[in-house]
Image 1 (cartoon, one colour):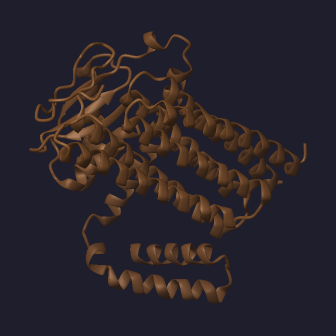
Image 2 (tube, helix red, strand yellow):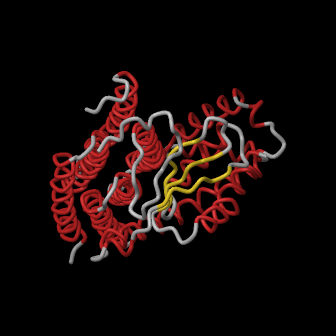
Length: 159
Length: 99
Length: 117
């Protein structure tokens, strides 16, 4: 059932890419999609692939919302007449509980594009992520926010 | 206002703003003060230039410009990576000597 | 009707994207140190560039071109934080930058011999 949905989606994507929605072209797209699914059947056969896909999509949605918010917030800071009072830059050491390369990379990239935070460096033993905060309230707040927000979602996604 | 006129006006305003952004980021490239600041401004400059080319694509209706814009974004990314690595290796090689 | 609406939306998105890019460049000049400048360049810059590409996707009426524009947006959102991160890391390795509130970043001590300013 889910395989059929994937093939259909790939066929539509193919038609959009080539710019023609004729029946023959859709059929060609479906054939290529089937081939791709056949090639990837091992990784698609994972028991919770569909569930994970849904979680990835919801994470992407959350990310886009946060990205819009962060751009607006940076814009407000930049356009403040009295810059000194609006800025409280600080570097926060965030203790990582995720371990794999993929998880840390994803988390670091998510942090960079979310409100007021920018990841700078990962310590050599991968236990601490250094995060630069533009307008820090307290460093504890920032740590709790990241740990309960993106880190939890990332861990769930890779679990 | 007809859609075509609105699009023409919007792309004109956008090109004006993006041109101004190009000039302003050039200021940071000139005044520095460190190499990292200049690389950052250069990175932003390629993003602004990409937006400029994309706005031209909208204004002229030639979608070929979109490919140029995407290629420019790729080039900017690679340049930033190369320059960041250069900043790191330069300091390591020269043993901490100032520029 | 719906195509008109798409074009008008595209106009708004285009001007919004250009405005964010302009704000990013103003931020890069106005903000006081490299890391804060990086906030402006990476966030406002990426959003601005992405919105302009989105405007292309909205106004071109061509599925292939729209898809290319969306792929461009995804690419931009993936690469901008990586570039910013690399640059921040490079700068962090070679300097101990004094931040505005007086806290000094001494995350690694091995390259502390010669602050760059």
